[in-house]
Image (tube, rainbow, N blue to C red):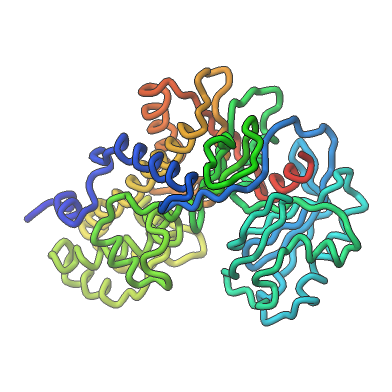
Length: 428
């Protein structure tokens, strides 16, 4: 009988050691260049008109609004990172339809609550729904995600409409990945970074980095000496080889064919990929008849359960369906052997992802001034099947430092990075 590793490789999921890292980095860089030129590319490379120049003023306080899921947060951000007067509430439209006035009233009320305590003139607003960034740091909503029901807001400039209801003022709107990049500035504490990358790996994934304006050929009228943050929407990268398991899982998603790279490395999809592998392996006879029968009745697999099982860990207070399905020791051992490569591949592809963006900054030539990477997200920090962060760093050491003499530093994790980064956007 073939080995589980041979079975996976035959279906397009090779051992992580066999992934062609150099080729994928080169392809990522090519897609970035095309996107910056306005040519067809799987990376959107969205200009944000947000820079990273200057130091964050010591003691500054910014009023911050944070909307990006089903919750809406507000508070006062200060540096070193601290959030005061924090308030969490449901996102307007998360629990039912709201009209335009009710939508903005919720944000205006919170802005009025926190603005008197701020020293920064601008409101920092982390708005993480699909939107077009503008040169005056506004955001035109393209569509809602996460089930928000506020149809009248689509097509509006959210910042402009909010400021109308506040009687004026200034605002800086960024998405969560851009805010995560900016949050790296809160970790400087006397350090010198030559550039910055913001990275999210949680339910989904995305990357932002700092680019020279001269490289952004699809825009005119930019200061040629300046730089700005580019939101790559990197989950859309479509050049990484996918396995039959990825394709089978993708076909069952709400939007098949979209964000193929995100579906190979992020938390919403690793469990479903694992389920496709297990069911295909059962048909090939890798499990006992009893386990195969129980597996056939499993309709879905959450990444948390897949991760905990592969790691051999039990989460207190949470029953794991895989513990029952693979109750026989031989079945459990085989299932873990089949599952581990999913996480190993995700870590290598994450490192490839980050390496490409660090290289694209054109910085990091000196270890005294590395490129700062601020990583955020539960998949990056809480995966248990493998030492994820350690694996990514080891890969980056090889891809960047050893092979290219490009230096990087993954900064200390910043709690509430999107809120902190939105505050920094307001301060800068």
